[in-house]
Amino acid sequence: MKEKLTIPELHEMTRKGEKIALLTAYDYPTALIEDRAGIDIILVGDSVAMTVLGYKSTLSVTLEEMLIFTKAVTRGVERAFVVADMPFLTYKTDVNTAIRNAGRFIQEGNADAVKLEGAGIVVPKVKAIVDSGIPVMGHIGLTPQSIGILGGYKVQGTKKESALKLIDDSKKLEDAGVFSIIAESIPRELTPFIKDAVNIPVYGIGAGAYVDGQILVVHDILGLFEDFIPRFVKKYTDLSKTLEDVFSRYINDVKNGNFPDDKQMYHMDKKELEKLKITLKKHKDSF
Ligand code: KIV
Image 1 (cartoon, rainbow, N blue to C red):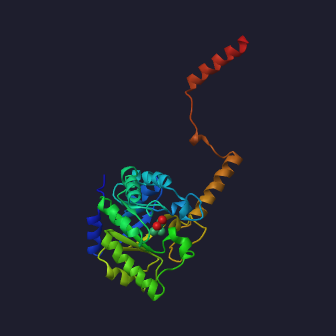
Image 2: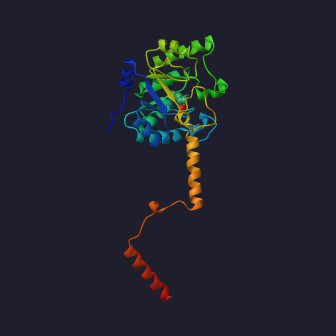
Image 3: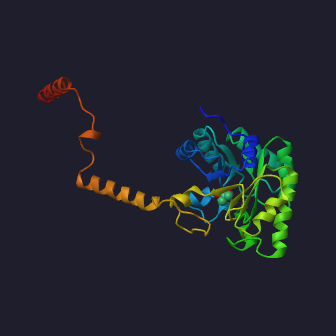
């Protein structure tokens, strides 16, 4: 059994200059394999809404659904630190609801922390959740739960004013107690200013290389999500093609009678088979 990573250990790795590797996962086998490969942080992202559930955006996934995915992931993990994404409208309305819902991810989902998107009205909720003893990861830049306001999946902080706001948001989130921040889809030139403004790790997704770690959506690196592929994605393999090929071969085998062959069959002891035949023959003869 491997030792679970803790926030102080993650911070120490960053202090020593080691980059943190993060990936999303939504199910037991993927979490198990990522953990075995040595991933540091697993995010049970609300991107599951699109990558697994087939919704058009992250807004459709519910708290109950996210809890199911979180439980599946935490069952597969020994070492990685697991962060659960709080879904749309489960933390913005009021502080008590935010604490109660965050608590469910820890108590029922067995997650190590929760992630909340944005700043502004989210900051007091972050503070309240942290004050109640639950670690929180922040998320700034392109925050997909605000896609209606942002007007699409666009790079954020490209103008002086919006860049200054992202720097300010990061500081406010740090003051509220987040242990790290994810910066999504921002110009690489802005990232160092955000990093220099805070004393906590900043992990990037489409934020360039000047960060303390990188996160990507697992379906994107595997080539399993084809609806749209952002510029920041590095596709490591094309599992869609591999799976399609496997499914076609299986279908052909079934249709051509090539599956199953003897290797996939069970056998009956010869003597038992003879006894069965004799009994059945007697039954037949008696009718
Ligand atoms: O839901 C998710 O996968 C995320 C990452 C893209 C950071 O929030």
